[in-house]
Image 1 (cartoon, rainbow, N blue to C red):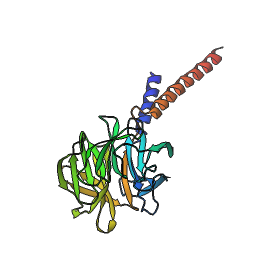
Image 2 (cartoon, rainbow, N blue to C red; image 1 turned 120 degrees about the vertical axis):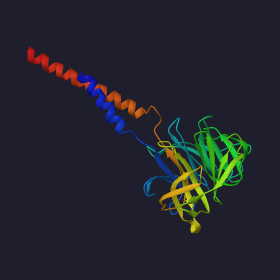
Image 3 (cartoon, helix red, strand yellow; image 1 turned 135 degrees about the vertical axis):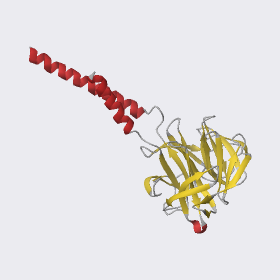
Image 4 (cartoon, rainbow, N blue to C red; image 1 turned 45 degrees about the horizontal axis):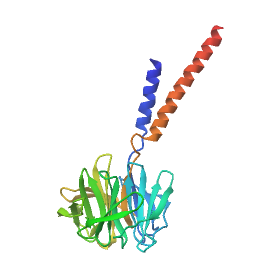
Length: 282
């Protein structure tokens, strides 16, 4: 009975301490600290530095792959300099770095999101081409987007695209980028000039965005995709060019390891108690 109780305590403690989704932002090339990853607060938009990225001569966007727990980064506009990288944000290391390639690739990438239905990334570029992109960076053009999109995100099975130079949020067909519907976005009751990021929080299925106001001010906040109403939590400290939520794959290998360690500890303690009892009775 005591062993069952101890194991239950271990499992509850591990569950309580599990890692939650974290919002990661990447700064653009024109930022004070360019091409860098930060953790962004969902409470007040403050940023905490994670690591610098240097590859790619222009353009920055990121997307998270929940199947392998890696953040993907696309940057670069020139042939031979369009980088496609996977990153472990937990250890602040680049896991792989290669080129974004394909017969229709001619420009920099603006936005990306993981498509769980295909196990690939949807990527939109500055020429308004929508790509289906393998994890190794091989891209196939599958259609066009209505304009430059600086944010792509799935909410359920619905794909949304955020315009960078207008206040428009599009609902898109993920198979070819065709417009299903669109609406105008406001934030805190005011107009915006465009958006520079879009990401879904997997903890509560709330959509988040980077909203750009007149004068280049960038706000972080939530967005209701059915109404276009956004609510900011604060002003971002730098020019962020993209956002993505990261989370631990389920089941978490860390949790499995921790449960194993708990069980081992319980067994070891029981053996020690038994050894002491045997000595006392000898």
